[in-house]
Length: 174
Image 1 (cartoon, rainbow, N blue to C red):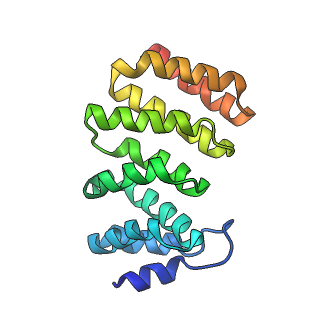
Image 2: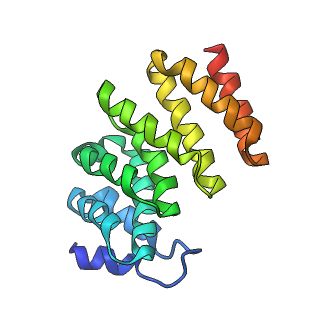
């Protein structure tokens, strides 16, 4: 499986469509080298390819979270620098799956807090979920995350409010 063939699966014109990203995810799930090519496509010049690569990588990492490990540094850097909405929401799903040091986790928490100001409510909602995921694994984050989610729940969209209520209920009883 060459990088070109993975990228070819991801090409298209419509950012509202995942195109053949499910096929790319299936290939990358079976072939570690293809997964690396999928991760590389997160930096492709074409925003549609980047978006679909993020979708496929997120799907693979949901089943195989350890597949992200070799790309931790690159993913953390991309999380901080990207402005593309679709990358942000998929990174908000993937980064909590990484095995992070306390310093890396703090870096990710700061990025997710900045995502709460994104114009996309999808990004904001996934950022809330990511923060809750971090707080579940690291109890020292719980007070700041609870406060952050409470504020986002009050000021957010109906979807954010619903997600926030569920996250708060889970975090407050844990």
